[in-house]
Length: 114
Length: 115
Image (cartoon, rainbow over all chains, first blue to last red; front, side, top):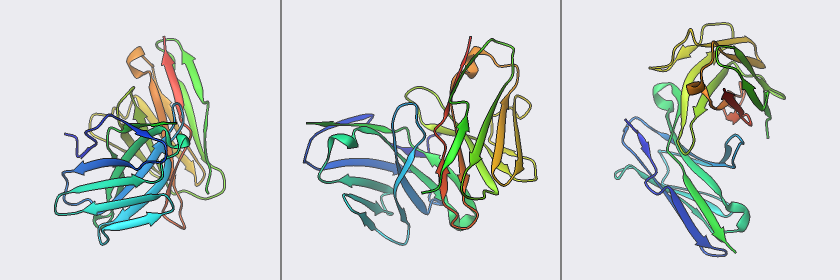
């Protein structure tokens, strides 16, 4: 039972354009969402997060949007740079319920084309 | 940011042997550490939650007698894969929760290959 889903296993974007990575979840108890970037043979690196009380959070080139009614979040990267090529995981937790465990999606491999 | 280290970074062992993986928080204290496993092209799957000074909490389907977890101090948790078999070959990643900020930081991972 995959509670966090990333339906696009891969995405290619031209350098300078916007990259949009999508994530859907099924557990309505999730109230905190995070995006991680991961290179091969390395641990995930935190990028940005959003609490369910917000619908948008921005940090530099990265913006995360949350649509609670649709149980959908997206990560926007603009402008995309070659160094952004990596696998991106979204993750969710239910902090208000005292559950800090992260449930990860399956990841989307982003390739930025120079 | 905070640093979490894992040792070894990669290990190759024979079937039937036991392998210990260490996870250390280098510049912060962590009462809680998490152990994940990632198979190729799949998501990170939480195996267990390690709490300092108490028994680990294992996720459904994870054998606690096979994956022994010890969290003896606020900066160190160990995962021992006992009697490893080829199907245990995977990428094992730990994360540590900073006691003060509640943020989770991930280690670089350990690639285990069981022959």
